[in-house]
Image 1: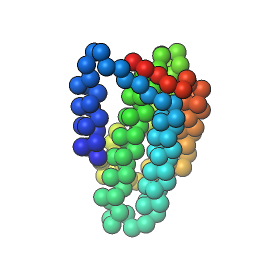
Image 2: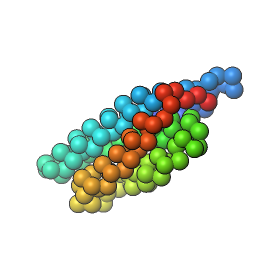
Image 3: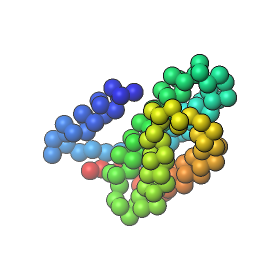
Image 4: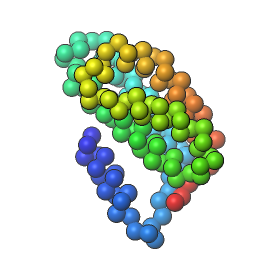
Length: 138
């Protein structure tokens, strides 16, 4: 999880000025789908024995955080006008999930968030991403 994030950051920072970074809308949509699937997995784990599932819950939440960060990074390759309505709900999700390493994060509020707020924000993000051009480059 941390290794994946460090690898992604290292490759992003070592790009030379003459290298172009590009992202495809379909890749962002695929990452959104994976994030939704992870949220379902986490929600299912919350139903079981919490003490036994705690390490798995933190690992899955960490993957969700990584996915949200990756989606955010990829969206920044588009123009500001194109992502204006997508970034606020994405930032709200990123802020909420940023406390995933705290034990208090895994209380009843997480279940409520996964059932209500998360799907609303993800739906807004996905709808906005579907309107983006097929490819963006920087």
